[in-house]
Length: 496
Ligand code: CS2
Image 1 (spheres, rainbow, N blue to C red):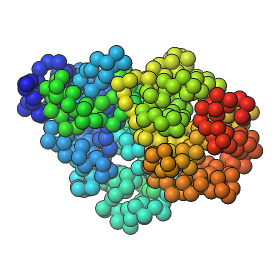
Image 2 (image 1 turned 30 degrees about the vertical axis):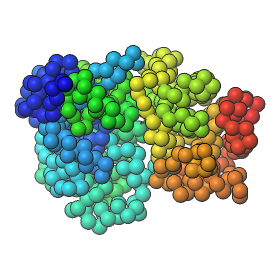
Image 3 (image 1 turned 60 degrees about the vertical axis):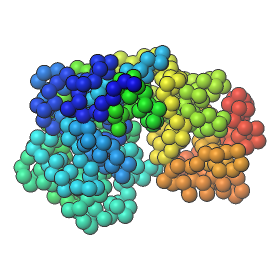
Image 4 (image 1 turned 45 degrees about the vertical axis):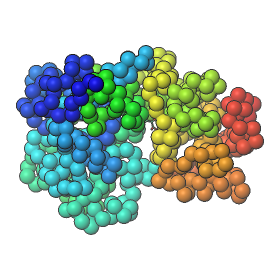
């Protein structure tokens, strides 16, 4: 039996050399970045880029303090604390070769709900130059249809009433930034790393809307001292399984309570607008650009929009994972036509990107049989995803008088998926914070008003008023109910 070592600083010299380990002295690293949301995405993405930066001399000031934010982060923070911030990134190449890299860039960890004051003081610390966030779309408390802050949400209202004891991201940022302002400290950068178009602009708008109510005297200071660069982030990571953890033990002798698994590919495009310095992430593969919009549009509309298509179609085909769904030839063909005929024509030019190659690689990424990306996770919280990933494509094509039938099929597939959920032979659950309303409106579209689902205004705005969209949608949903997913995809040109 192979020897096994718990992952921590003391044991680092004991591991066999099969995995890669930090080659820098972690005791010399100072914290310059606060990262809110130390879930899998951050740890397989920005923590990896930063770890690579720390490998080169002169960058000691860019260690990360990882903040656990939602309840689901508690276990991760506990494990990271036990492991001195160390964790492993496991990558399986499409040919099946497994590599492991222990990441050292997280040098401190805090769990916000347990000690909000420590988190606020950390953000207010003069050594902190960047705050980054991955808190998922839901963490921003915004209305998916209008993009405006939900100022009357109970948690937001609580923060306005008890500003010294924050719970929402806006409460935390406002309190900490106020301390920086009052103490005469330099501003900093706040960077969203969530899959939201113009994520930096949106975060600024939401924070300023909150500040206007909570601390109106701070508005100007934020405008001049804080920057909010937009960014496009990309790396697919499935949920880790016990089998993955066992593999890490068996192949690399690493006993790690919180490793992450992900694909080899990663991408990060960032607007170069940092108020108080930044790590040289460009030296390790990140791309700094003036305008992130063409990159982010390409990624969100193709990759995330493509995922939603695979999520619903694959589930209707009784598949469990993305690789299973995308290797069904009819689904693959339908997906590629959606990308080529409906998404590509509304994308701008992203410098340095060959779109055909980008799509080819994207399909290969979906097909990677070692990345068991669950369709249930893809379909989860579609109510915040679809308005960002798919509806803008429909709207822009409607304006241009161009094709919308495949994008509209995603919407009809979503409705049918909701109608069928939990009925005999259809065992999937709807996991969505708008579950009740979605389910009710999908069912009402069968029995009462055929347009009930697309009239859900918080998602679709006034899209149901478009006759072309409504007509296409009605033919397609009718096709699903009468003939099923296969016939709809095969005969989409005749149906809509
Ligand atoms: C996925 C994303 O859950 C989803 O909707 O599309 O998590 C996707 O895997 C990442 O954005 C990849 O960068």
